[in-house]
Amino acid sequence: MREGSHSRVVQELGRRIAGLTLPAGTVLTLAGLEEEFGTSRTVVREAVRVLETHGLVRSRRRVGITVQPRTEWDNLNASVIQWTLDGPRRRDQLIELMDLREAVEPVAARLAAQRATAAQRAELLRSATALSDLGAAGLGDSDEYLAADIAYHSLLLTASGNALLAQMAGPVTEILRGRTSYGLTPSDPRPGTLEAHVATAAAVAAGDVDVAEREARHHLSLVADEVSALQQPSTVPGSIPIA
Image (tube, rainbow, N blue to C red; front, side):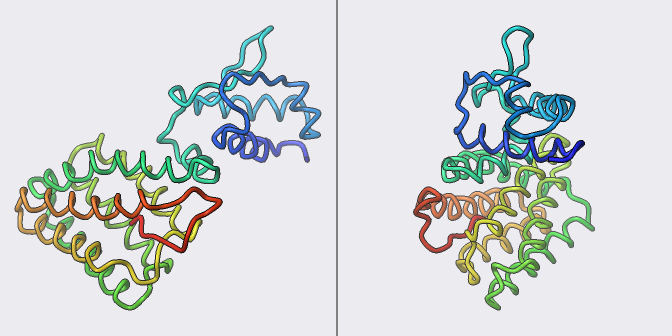
């Protein structure tokens, strides 16, 4: 490994920790990592610092580098989400993230119906319509569908007018990207999920707070049911929507 390539050390160790190959309590050493990766102490230190910022490890003199429990991780960090989805806990991670989405997005939809600008309302409806058209054309697993899906859900959260809810756009984006990376989305999404996108956007555009919240919750409940049926990575059958 060439000098300065600490990112490769970060990626490998991140996947091992998130994938539970290195369980909580495991103690690593700079010398051991330096030897394993065939790189300099400086590169290893840089990698460890990155992992520390994500809460995955804690470095202490005379103790070493200790892998931390999941409760200490920055679980909404994009890298941590990706590393976990790469491992054997993919299904559990998706379920946990769906729990979070079900708690957040319906509230965001309700607030968006109250607070969104005219431009945001129009754009949300355009994104929902694009999703419906792409899905009906059998392009649910395309890059175009993914881009429209990310735009839709990100805008819904941003249009809430709540900066904290808007920050959830990052984790939601990683969930949606994961479906493409792991082949978990069908080319023909269920009509119900497409209809719920449009119904939510229409309610936001009309300023109907109750319908916006209800339709967003309905959409996510459909997705959550599909995620719950997903098997762990070694036995994933076919594809399911997680949009």
